[in-house]
Length: 109
Image 1 (tube, one colour):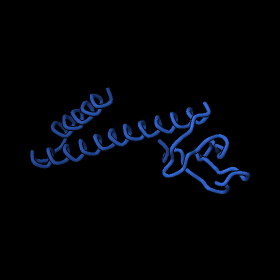
Image 2 (spheres, rainbow, N blue to C red; image 1 turned 120 degrees about the vertical axis):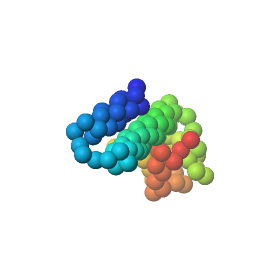
Image 3 (tube, rainbow, N blue to C red; image 1 turned 90 degrees about the vertical axis):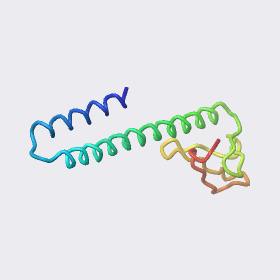
């Protein structure tokens, strides 16, 4: 849906330029391609960020369910790490061998 909306916006942009400016055809096409690239880049970035956020939510849910997570070379569990929800980071508990270590939830599988 967002891609269709993006194409509609670019089409409207081209229509406005075609009827209300005195640019030549090459300038209109160039401006439209630049706007299209910007809109498509923004949509791609938004989609990528949504996927990353979904992955972090999945990691945090599995942590809250008591499951073991693989974060780089570390195994993160509720026994060894606590979760900072605000920063979405796992922090090594003082009584564990991982004391003071911090791992971002986005680095976990």
